[in-house]
Length: 291
Image 1: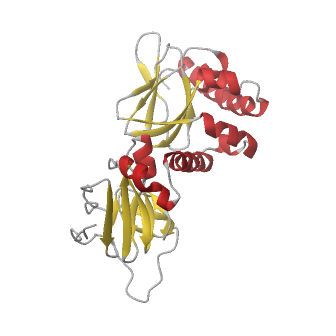
Image 2: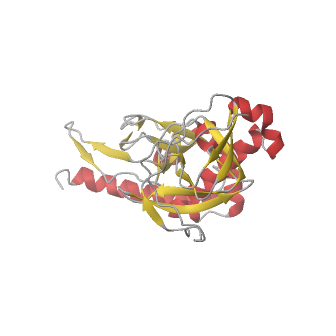
Image 3: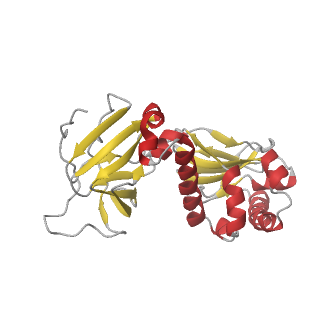
């Protein structure tokens, strides 16, 4: 396969020869340089220098990458101008599968920490050659789900209380989904069809009063759950939830919950606690619309 020339340097700082790689938790300026361009073939090899942006958080993505040689850093935006190193991946590791499989924006930026050789695979490329790396579509889909669940577990105090056994069952039922800014996930007064776990992005929450005016609740942020009141009690949604940014979520459909999780007292208790707190907040807003 042809060797690709590097399209240009990255704006991030890279270690000098002999310096150690950055530690997890270290921050860099949020990557602004354009990531590598689209691969011309389903399977493509990229030879990249240190400091090259491979993928950038928030960008669309339709391919994944296997590390043949070298090392990359995975960065999440920690502020408007900073990105925090959350992990490093080296030879044999892979990344980018979530955006490809779930058709959602890239959830992190990936920057080479040293000279690195990557094999880029599209959906077709994964089918053709994934088995060479111990990867096929079911394995990659399972890994996507594991990463999404790990994100949800870390970000949600409610979910972190669940037992590992229940998590294993829940993992097979949650479905990744991505929505654009402006998408309405719950509508006040309408039946709720699912429980949502927000993994990436921000959602606005609004209560509509009898006279038609609305009151905003605090925004939903990464790790928040919503839709549990309708799921548990069959009530209509007590608020409208709308995506303020592109969002990546996990969705548990009501029928699946009723069939497989209604008898799980542990999960019901966790959702009831969350639902009661949310209903009390709703009643406060209704009682004090100007507050």
